[in-house]
Length: 323
Image: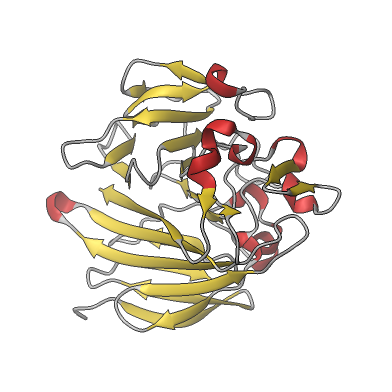
């Protein structure tokens, strides 16, 4: 058995991709388009990611499966925002009506050899986002203590423009529990003291009106037929200083954990996939983000989204599985 992670070029329905195989037999499959995670199977071949099935789905990005969300997370209210002296609208660029930014259309390339898959891409200036960003996405596989297996994802954005730019970062994986056909029998826990109140378009209410306190942790013991599409905030770190959210199959004890740094990703959106065009309610999205939806229009997010020339912003996330 190999003692290092093997990374091989592979074809995904005519699109370039890479297959990672860890020393324990775990695998991850990543497409060049959008640095999109298509599959993660811990040792034993159990699929944990509800990804795209073919190139047409990858190009269409229905459901934003495993989307690297750059340069904004969630939605922009009315498809318009202002930054500095610029006012940008969806009349100039229809992408401003899209959920999760523009990075899903960037074709990434591999930059380094080694145990980790290091991908790099450039978001070129456009009419709706007239600045250049250099984006790096790093995937790594690890085995840990207590039978846990890990997939880590690190996203780094560098401002390659000559002026301040607005940037928020997120990731949008759909998680599926092995052996289950849907989400109804799952339970979930998010260590949060707050949630975001939004309008019907999932745009947070203005200012402090968006903030609501809840009893920590947020727990759903049985998803059942509940439709969940909610952002949690005021995340509570563990003794290790990280925030760990859990998706659990109570019957088998299997669990998927998402770990995020609260300083990098102070919010987590949870979505039960009710309106996916394909396989609705078959998986649950855990979406860690560096800022709220519509942060480009929020005064309380102005400092958090501003990135100076040559500076970088990062987000490191880890998925873990205990079978």
